[in-house]
Length: 325
Image 1 (cartoon, rainbow, N blue to C red):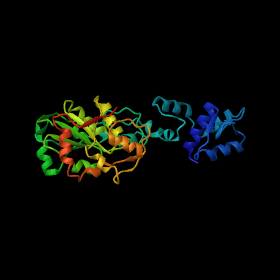
Image 2: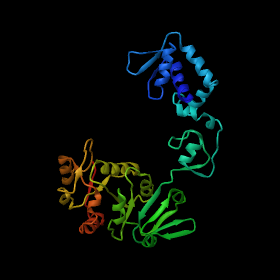
Image 3: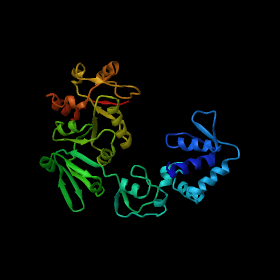
Image 4: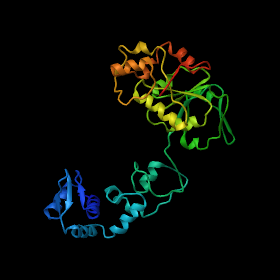
């Protein structure tokens, strides 16, 4: 039994008089029951301190964590929880008051500060903390990027390298987009569809990998006057991604649905769950909801009609976009 689990369990029992059992603490609770310190309550999976036994539990807590009152107060000052064994485990590193400078990845700082790579650090840092996301784009013709004394023709770069990428640390040195801005920017949910999407010279595509929308949101904020439409799977999650992006940039959520999508209803759709759906009332979507099916966007990629249909949807004329409600 980990002493951190025992310390957290004792802390809860001493402070609240009760604790719920878990896989980690059940052997410990049974041991305390044998010592006649605890008993089961009338609530399922809950144990309570027997009358007159709280001081005995406090003495045991002092044995394994002599300065527990001060240390638990310190944890709470960092918005951490002394009832959580992982937070108690962090104490030695947290008390070192490590200082980071320069630029450091978020997970590295979290781990170094004692809370683990997946848990947000509670210590202050002088460093710039990054998630190190990457913007992947297929720029439109004439789009330039300027930072400091450099000017890059993004479209020409993409002709050589297929696409242009901006790691977050490079993006933080962002200057401005210049040259000819795209008429329309299409965010694309799936990698295969993004890389093979047939684009007109005035249209720009940006990879938006599922729920990970941070990078595309950063990009769209730099292009507030460029038309935007999201192209994703025809299912609730695809429409939800569009709404997430729209809410973050303060725009109306728009979703591209191919005009020929109805041709893919028989035989090319898959089972789908449309619970809690909120999106466009398009005939194809209505049918997908009725049949509880969905269509992955990749099925459209080899359709010869896609290039023209997408150009019409992204063009300067009235776009064939359907607005999410």
